[in-house]
Length: 117
Image 1 (cartoon, rainbow, N blue to C red):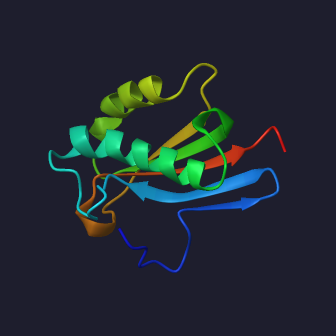
Image 2 (cartoon, rainbow, N blue to C red):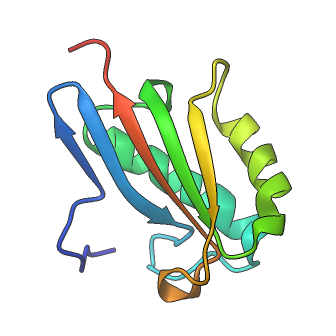
Image 3 (spheres, rainbow, N blue to C red):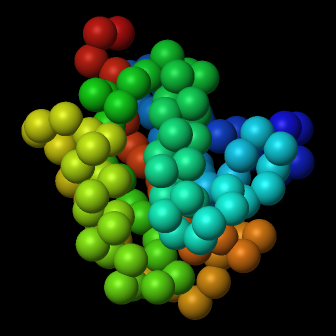
């Protein structure tokens, strides 16, 4: 998938990493078929890939912001979040929004600190 956006998936400055919003899109650039249940795990997989691209891991994440077009998907988000992050999990904010790019239903962004710099 080519990056048609004017920003990187992740940016690292010293030990600080900021991950741009990750949608539940597959390598082809299409939303994972199946709505929230498919898009949410895919968005977190894309978060993982963005972290790795700058030498970070999910263990380095200190803050996550998740945007949902349907706030009732919060329980499903919690299940994915608990599976994705080990204890102690990073702080998290969940925000209900009217819409997301490409018609997505979930977008995830993160802030990480790479501890072994």
